[in-house]
Length: 502
Image (tube, rainbow, N blue to C red; front, top):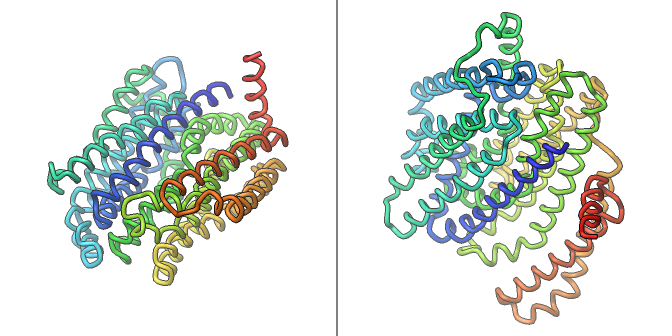
């Protein structure tokens, strides 16, 4: 776990640096200089590109992770890098063909409610290509156990470049057309930087080693890749929401939803690093049939993701009113509070249990997950269609939460029945008890100390109250986690630091 821990920590730091930049950008630049419709435009464009690039991968990213242990050697890894470039290219060409054939129909869907989006829909294939290969190069780096630089590029580099574009447009230095092109160009830059980093690591060959790819191995990779193509929607269900909202509710409401989603997305930031670095380890353990190790890894990852994600969600939720009070035009975006609640819970569920999806996908029963993906996709689409009409943006968030709950109930039940793999432990109950206690302390603070601190409701007094409350509750919860030994790993790390200082 040494490499996993180091790369996860570095990746998490890169993620949170990106979150800090994104926080400033989202709440103090976007809300000031862009209209709600323009924010909705950028959100739908990115979500659509990520969704379509996920489909265009043809399952190749999952294949790289699953089959890398079979290709691994001390030289060029038998050309798996070249193979990882070829399959997505085929997928992108298929996507491009579909886009050309149905471009007018797709544009017409958004023309009525989101005319601004319809105007720039022609840029979607280009943005999809950049997002596709940016992700492909990230995956190749992750199987080499190097995720920090790609995370910096995705989480920091893109945000810094886009921040510059937002400011140039906000101060009317550039036109909207130039701004949208620069926005798409940030993903092109990220793609190139990831490729340069990957080449610098060595062990990379653009040549496909066809001699190593026996007919039997190609058949196995082909079956798995085709299957993963069908399951590509699983990790992209939240992206479907933006497409539905853009068509049914309009780009302006999608902009409100986008701001709320940014807040909720912070909950799963740690899993982006830990998930990327643990997947190759899980794949190796599954390949070797070491189910004790799979169980240990699954429970450890699930526990720590639950601990971190619930803590992040807790501190977001208790300070949400203060956050909306501070952002420019906050009253225009405060309608997204329900989205933060529902999507925050969905992110907790997904980040805590997604390791179960990895276990099944890397096992010989991977094809069985097709049923679960079908349930997830059908429920998300059906509930979005139903609930957006009833509850607007809250309905879209509720659709995601309900879909995830149903999906993981079925998935985890199957994992236990077929593989005897369980992600649950008594320590997770401790986490839930501590978070419930934290909410109780928050209510006590709000009803007793907040009125004493906030004599007059000003931004300064709101900030002082939020900072004091957050600091006190954070210390209390941290002490409780250590004293109750919720995580032996955390206790060992703390004890190690204490011994070093002595």
